[in-house]
Length: 93
Image 1 (cartoon, one colour):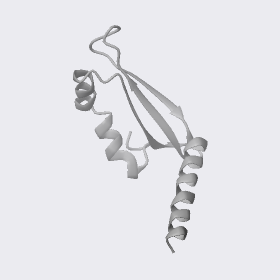
Image 2 (cartoon, helix red, strand yellow; image 1 turned 135 degrees about the horizontal axis):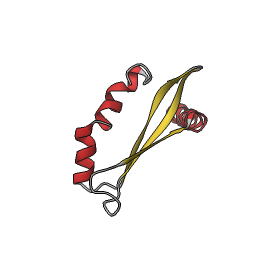
Image 3 (cartoon, rainbow, N blue to C red; image 1 turned 180 degrees about the vertical axis):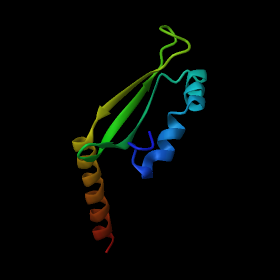
């Protein structure tokens, strides 16, 4: 995975998707957990969202991982956040 996850996000990716953390989520009966990271594709890094789903009625020992490419949505979201920050800074002056 180190070859495809952006170095800036690699430690968080490994921590959140480690067997130990997944077991903890199951123990806590956390039904949904997820996060965003940058993954390397042939044309460069793009944002991907991972969802971890658990349902003890289906299986007490398994979780489902799903991955979805969200680059355009995430970049738009980050752009809006940056615009808000800049607007707040301008308003403080």
